[in-house]
Image 1 (tube, rainbow, N blue to C red):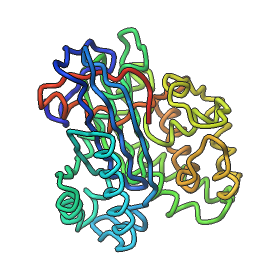
Image 2: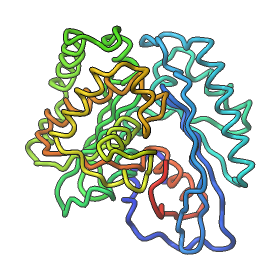
Image 3: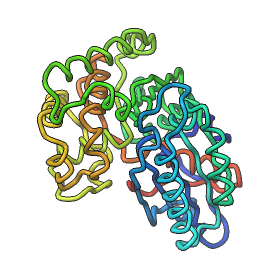
Length: 340
């Protein structure tokens, strides 16, 4: 199965993985952060998360469409990828893959930088299309919603873009990638700390305009789809709603953010200065600067979809990508539990 294809839901029964446990890793080169996921696949194809890591590098910092990546952002990202690759190999990873998302696909020199990262690390860095990213987000999150046969919309709010995928069960019916990234929107609209109501309103208007031109959301409303969300914005908001003293993926995975709770968290993020947000116990400091914009995007999508709440998935694109790549080498795996 190609990483861009429809993957089965996380809850599907895997085939047995013969032999000793296999350790495998994936590195996600995002617009705001670089993430590592390392799993051990044991008997019965059960994939246990053994290591995760996140480094905020802001590869998409100040990136205009078809512009070039900032040299400082490239240097930070290259250092993070090298460090995480070494960490994966120290954990015994026999297989190591990497992929990039919005910043690499939007930048004029994105493909060149991806090749440089791959050459330095000894592994290829695949640049996902927006549709591939959306389908993988769906594959990762589909198992958490418990829709009972209803349609499902999966949203992944990233640093450079936001992906939407509508489906039922394991099958994706439609997917879209929108230029609504938390990093990009925050830099464009939220220039004060904290932003005044006028800046927040301008951000919401931009998001609403983009969503109004998205036919997929009309289908979502007609289908009465359940709404699920993955990615750093959604998981951070769930952790805040749960008042966790530290991030706990097992608690976050499957948590339902009500519309009332989501609206309250948006207001809280917008009125709190960045330094204070960075000190929130469950929030990664690198997420603090972009959380207000990401929260507005998620809230506006929930409103446009007519959803009562949002089911949050701790599993994201990297989980489905790793699962797909393992399948290509003959290893069927299902994640045993939540893990960033």
